[in-house]
Each structure stands twice: as structure tokens, then as C-alpha cells.
Image 1 (cartoon, rainbow, N blue to C red):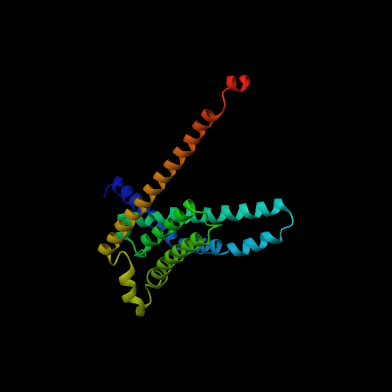
Image 2: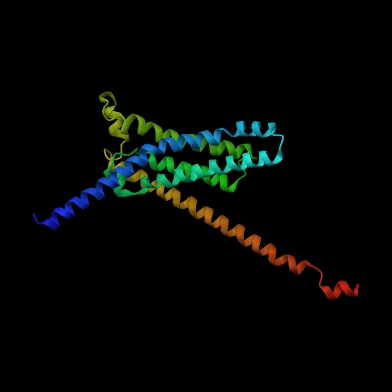
Length: 221
């Protein structure tokens, strides 16, 4: 082999190895993010009880805003890292939870509920968001713990082969494309809703000057 061939082979090996290591790290770290998402979401009653004990209004506002920022930021980061489950080559080539795309879709639905309804004031919306978060976390935890991370356990070999993406590439890709279609539908719906809300707000601002009394009429009266 020529020196250039050796250099190219080493470079490709480092790139591929680094890519696989990063993906494996994200997959292994996502359970921590899912857990934090559930803890912060389900910890809302505790935060509200703590706010009622706050004697200082400023302290209560800071506590509540900090909680809201952390809760929603962790949810967004979890969905952003879950985007690896919508990469066909990664899904078919690596051992990933086969229901990972569905879990990401459930996370996006919970996020859409938070964006379109007052989850902190509407108990029905809060329950809907909670149901989708718990469902998504379950669909991610079970395949990861009992299949991907339990590959050395012989008594789980059948379950592992059924819910690991590299063992079932066809089914994994079907699930991925269906989930990706759901993500696209929700994203388009959120975009249209935001566009209509912005149009209504702009229309109201333009109508307000027209409703005001002209200065000439006010002076004449």
C-alpha cells in the first residue's frame, strides 16, 4: 500500500469510529435527558407548593421562571438529540431502539401541546402532555435497557433481536419513515398556526389607528 492509501484508511477509520462513538454516547445519554424531562414535568405540583410558601414576590417569580426555562430547555434538547433516529443509514446500520422514532414523535406532540395550550393552567392539557411524555419515555427505555444494553444476556436474545434496529432494518425503516411523516405534519401544523396568529396580531395593530378619532373631529367637537 502507498502512504496515501494508509493515510486515507486511517482517516476513514477515525472518522467512522468517532461518528459511531458519538452516536452511541447520545443514545446512552438520552435516558438521563428523558428522566430529567419527566422529573421536571411531573415536579410541577412541588414547584407550586414551594411558590405558595415564598413570602417575597421577586423570589417566587425567579423560582417559577427558572423552573419553566429548565423544563422546556431539557425537553427541546432531548428532542434535538433524538433526531438521530430519523437518519436512515444510522437506524439501519447501528443497534438502536427500534421505537426510538416513535418516542421522539411523542416528545414532539407533548411539545406541541405546550406550545398551543396553557399547560400550566389547563389540567386537561397537562394530562395530555404527561401521557405523551410517559409513553415516549417507555418506548425508549424498554428497548434500550432490555435489548441494546442487554445484548450479553442470552435469555433476552429474542426480545433484543425484535426491538433492535440493526436486527430488523426493514421494520426499523418503516417505523422511522412513518414517525418522520408525523413529525412533518406536526411541524407544518405548528407553522400554519404561528403564521395565522402572527397575521391576526398584525391585523389588530393595523386596525387600531383606524378606529381612533381623527384630530380634526376631536377639535371640532
